[in-house]
Amino acid sequence: MLLRTLLSYHLLSTMEPPVELIETEAGLKNRSTATDAFIDFMGGVAGGTASVYVGQPLDTVKVKMQTFPTLYTNAMDCTVQTFKQDGIVRGLYAGTIPSLAAQISENSVLFLFYGICQKMVAKVVSVPSVDKLTPLHNALAGSGAAFFSSFTLCPTELIKCRLQAMREMATQGQLEGGLERLKIGPWGLTKEILQQEGFRGLFKGLTSTFMREMPGYFFFFGGYEICRHLLTPAGKTKDEIGAWRTIVCGGVGGVALWTAIFPADVVKSRIQVQCVAGSVTPTFIATVLKIFREEGVTALYKGLGPTVVRTFPATGALFLAYETTKKWLGYVSDQVTG
Image (cartoon, rainbow, N blue to C red; front, side):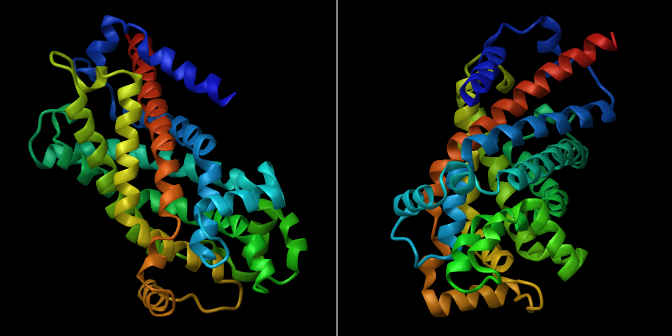
């Protein structure tokens, strides 16, 4: 199913586009701000869905290694143990539903505000249209968009991380109810947090989410746009680079993001997983200092390997889905409006 979906995106993106579509991507046709916002939103939905199904197993490994670094010798050991103990669905794909919720909500809002922030940046720097923005301008727009997407991401990330690390918490005696708690599921865990910690309980780790997302997406969109600029053939625009170049550019953007902000992600995961009802949520700085004192600086990079391996195909799929959806929805919109 996943292969068929990616192949469909590839076929769509490699089809010879109509003249009207080329005109749209070149900025020769103007759409309303609301229409552009809707197209960016739907592109984010498609991109978020694609990235989850491609990258979820290694995301599970990443979270387990971040929160319980002493239990596994390396990423392969963590993957094998997870598969043996819990299988594929409850093990490697644990937390897929909240991951889908997280990625769809985050990326739809992220790309919605990315388009809005691009227009704001273009206005500030007196650039006639967003397709004339430099990679630095796009990086700044991405960083601004990440502020808004953090509010949708934090609650779903909290649920996802706790589900992914639930077995380790139970075996370490940090979870009331022991291994029986593995049956709770995302909706039951959400209900429990609301009952015990209130609405604010869903936003534990929001500060560290800001500190991860805003600089991270500066590098994410900056890396993506620089790569698109470098891979654009002579005589073509960056919107005509094709499917495989888009995947490579997306992968480069993802690697740039995670390499830059991985320590902040480790801190966020620790705060969200290990802060249960009734406990005081530690600050971002306090958590960093505790990890540094007790485990050393290398603990801040636990899980980086599987993250880099995961992010290249996952963000490649994200941008392929996003660009393809954006291109064809723009074409349909222009046909409908004449």
